[in-house]
Length: 204
Image 1 (cartoon, rainbow, N blue to C red):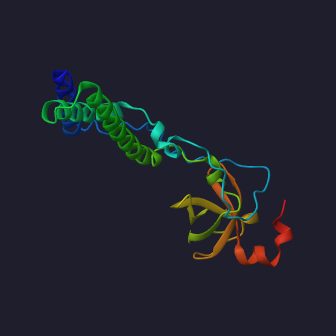
Image 2 (image 1 turned 180 degrees about the vertical axis):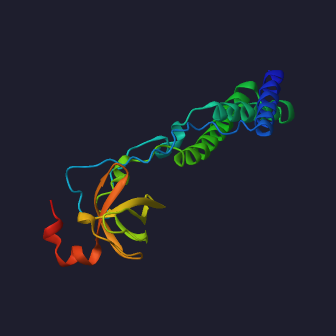
């Protein structure tokens, strides 16, 4: 049985080393970042609201089961079992039990670590990308009947979009604006001070 423990440890250690050297350490599913921007018929309101949370692997890191956590289990199971039997002289049953506990702890640590990495790779919640109601600043002057650019923060990231003024009006650079609609990759904006002066005129 000592040979089995040692084999588990050697296999796990060698696999981990080779994976690190060859760059196979990251096994997260790359869902990509799909910035979903769609026109909406219903005005979302001028807001900065929280959105419903969808449970995923990062909510339950102990449930993460992948190749890396399996290898971690084998490595620590083998190391603990071999040391307890060969060095400490423990009975086989006790060594197996403690080895399993050590392996499970290692697997859970690796699983939680990978879950945190994967959290940055998963597709963002589309609800966090509703353009209507976003407050932005004009970074490139919007000419009359033309298109300029706005910058804003969305989902904790600084973003920019093409923008036109409401009813084709010009909007100067550095003007604070609110997005009232978004269609075909272009936001329609209204200066924030105009909106505050006549909020009813821009409500759906």
